[in-house]
Length: 173
Image (cartoon, rainbow, N blue to C red; front, side, top):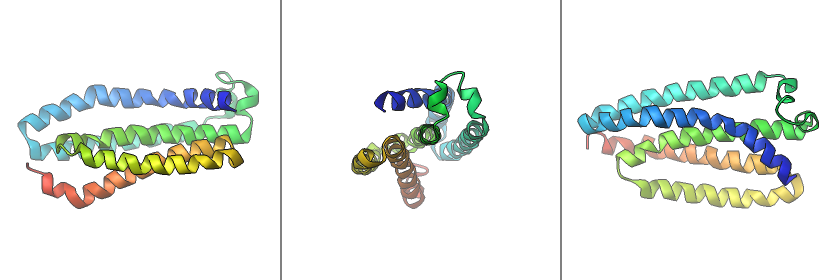
């Protein structure tokens, strides 16, 4: 099962290309904007995050609509035809997109110099992930995929919640 999980996570990991492109091209734009106009930076960052959200959602939708037989060219047919493994692949891919988004969202903490908040949010998610991993014994590969995706979802939600409450205090600083 560990080998299968590894194969599925490697396949879903292709989505990291989106995150790499975003980081390579957008982060320098954000840093440059921040050095010249700090207040406007948050508006620009929010716009890029919306674009990234639509791109990730679009790609994830395409993956979900792709017939299993297409993935059979990349992964052993018996793995991709197994419903549990196939849904685990979907969940792992969703987790990758959530990881990409949280990395992009983390730019706010870099700009306002509050990585301490970021680390506290990650600690909460790590504890959640650790606790949910105990379900792997009973539910297997699906529980592993769900625990990871949920941890990334919690990171995103906590970051967005913190930003909603506190960001206005830092805008313009």
